[in-house]
Length: 114
Length: 111
Image (tube, rainbow over all chains, first blue to last red; front, side):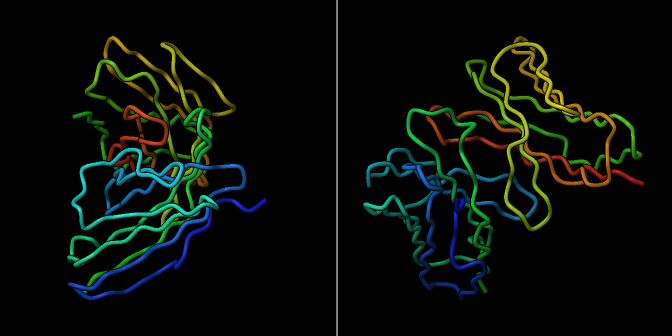
């Protein structure tokens, strides 16, 4: 049983560019949450998707957008990249109605903005 | 806005000792508390969760919750070098999947 997978593992972009990160949830999970973890910081909640809709959003600008597909996989898009967007982007999946302790994190995508 | 505070460390303990990691949170209404372990370059891994006041033990790990003091701690008994990692404290932010994390405490266990 595959866990949460993310692609790509690493990415280098320049300021002003756009990036798309991808996440496939663990089998049986239908909810995907995205987090940003800057170096030396804890993860920060970006948003959560369930039934192909954004269910909750953290304190991130509109440059951060997402999508969930019918197979529950998800994308995170970031437009007009800033140097401060350099971070580890984590996807976490869970099953609605089950406790948050059942949430699993993927390996992350490390984004470097030059 | 909910906040979680942790001492960033590093905390250094000798092998076999008890490591004590602490965390405070701002929202008195918080109900669910989590400890994650994160090895360098890896993603967070859940090691303990606690919902009720008191202690919860799982192997070498004990989580302690004091809601009156808004304080959560994690004790690691018989610390091993493999326990060297950053430990993240988190509280549930109000809906499933929304976790509010502290900055983490880096633990180093010396052989």
